[in-house]
Length: 293
Ligand code: PAF
Image (tube, rainbow, N blue to C red; front, side, top):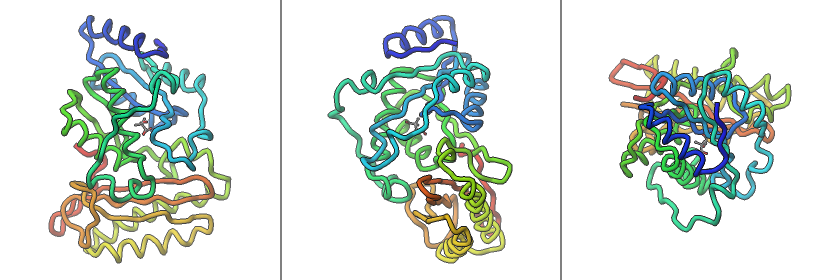
């Protein structure tokens, strides 16, 4: 497995793989890898012959009071995990390599960043689309795999690729959970033992929402109220948001119909955990979409 630190080395290594007729798969990460990331590598391997994993804690997607400096990092452990899972190259640049100077060109995201994390983390998705665009231009992958745990990010990236004609296919990967339902996240390390014990309440709240929809409830306010009540039983939980939006434009819906994203962000101490489910509703029929096509 190769490790590159500069854009030039990365381009040269990928050009060589391409010259051998290999298709390039890409898994962008901020490191501190867990099983969820490793399953993204598995999916990338199914769809390509040379898998590049980027490990870069991207400063432009963190707000001034967020956890950029504290974000967990362990390159040696990540390297071992990537190698064991069969990645071909890790691109792990320094901030100065990706941003030798402040970018003067930024993105404006309409609608898709108005709600959910976009509303609570101003500028976050501008930073995400900036770094992902740069990574796409550096790596020029045939396919790139993104986890559906970050559903708003996934939907924005799909739209970025569509609107800007990036020649890459985006593949969504289902959320990977601990055995008690907690969605895997690098930020789970921030949880105290008590917070960790309470955190599966988020998955239970999503399951409660799904059960309500399956039993015929279509009123978004009622579903959200039930989820709030359930999460309030966890003394350490502080709800940032619970929202139900259409997957088309990420705007809130009053009544559930078509494809909807039920998403939440909840603080447990300093850990801000996000999770979601996507449901497709057609009349009385309800289906969960684990990975958007
Ligand atoms: O999902 C993440 O880890 C990050 O937002 C990404 C896509 C690697 C961009 O920094």
